[in-house]
Image 1 (cartoon, rainbow, N blue to C red):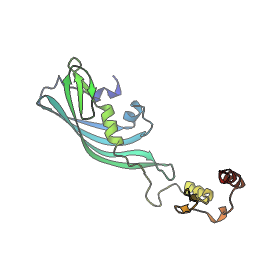
Image 2 (cartoon, rainbow, N blue to C red):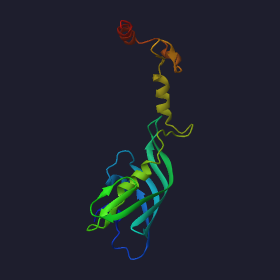
Image 3 (cartoon, one colour):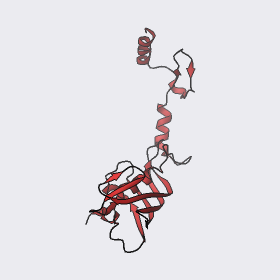
Image 4 (cartoon, helix red, strand yellow):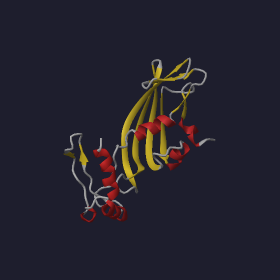
Length: 187
């Protein structure tokens, strides 16, 4: 039996109008989906499948955490996840997913929620994720300080924009950049 088989819901075989299922999503789930973005975590998922007039309402409650790399030090960090999501499914002639309503063919009668569940989790991860102050890998933070250089950006008129980040030891401009700047000045 495939690890993801438990995420297939037989809509035609529902014996009651409401079916409640519970899942534990962990590293095995993410590995089975072969997703590189999230590789570990532990989430408790409660799914309520409710039969309504002509469709099924699937209500997800997801709580736990996933491990993602810190954008500053690149070490794994736990990103808390807590959300409620919903999807609607109906039986029809052919498969269709328009984003709001998933149509599953009558002859199949089964909806696979594994990928939808992954998407609900992934959508809760912020674009930027950092450890709290003082929790980043100290060696990596020291390396960043050593290699941080003077950064200056200019707009089309040559005026400086943005701030500068620098390290007192890195005040001199690399001669290779000076040569490249000459090319820009010729245009």
